[in-house]
Figure 1 (cartoon, rainbow, N blue to C red):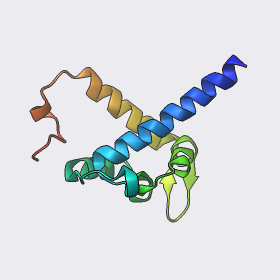
Figure 2: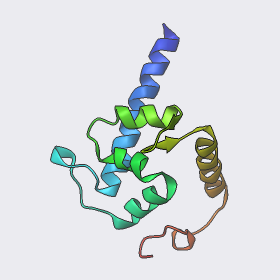
Figure 3: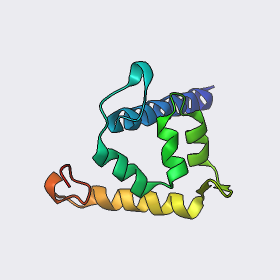
Figure 4: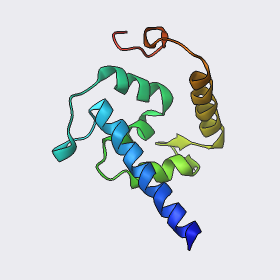
Amino acid sequence: VECTNMQLAKNKLAILAAHAISRLSGLLGGHLATPRSQQAVVLLSALFTPQIAEGFTELNPSELLKYLNTNVENPCKIWNDKMRKELLSHAKEQLEIPSEIEELPYAVGD
């Protein structure tokens, strides 16, 4: 029972995280709409393939989360273990490097 509850909690957190990224980027419409952040959109485009990044425009991120957690290789979408590992490695590397926000490659105002 505890394992099921933990998985439900992880799923809910993943949905909330996807919504947070979408709202910070200004990619959601409807009642969750926020102003567009070109810097955030550029960042998502740099981190994900265009078809995967497009998933952040959906109110229901379940399809996006499914793609991010599985291997998808077809003419329209490519996301696999190697890409996932590269992204996680890059994110960990960036977290370990102490720097001022202005020094980040995706800094606001670039």
